[in-house]
Length: 129
Image (cartoon, rainbow, N blue to C red):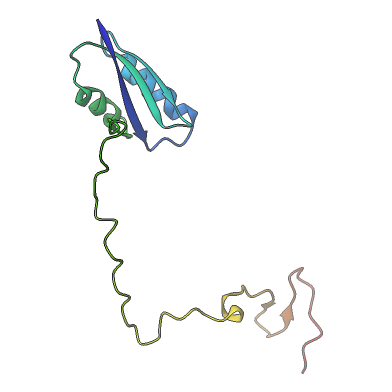
């Protein structure tokens, strides 16, 4: 007999990652796996009694994360995200945003003689002497 195990997969960056995970899981005896990159889920047919931890260990061994999703309708696990955000620290006004003029990249360049050149490398003769 076989049973189906669903896994949530993390760390995939492309379809090749999904293929790599499916191949790794399918190497186990009696296991057939299909991994969907877009949904980050794997559907794995395993022999009855196969612990999900064995599948998770195989996925983690090749550099990805895996976990069994929480059952539908199960109460959400509180990870402390509902707590009030921390109070901002006082940095003496140092966390104020810079004016736009200070964030903008500098367009022109100056050579060693102090002559200013524009973006195309031509001398900029608009500078006052």
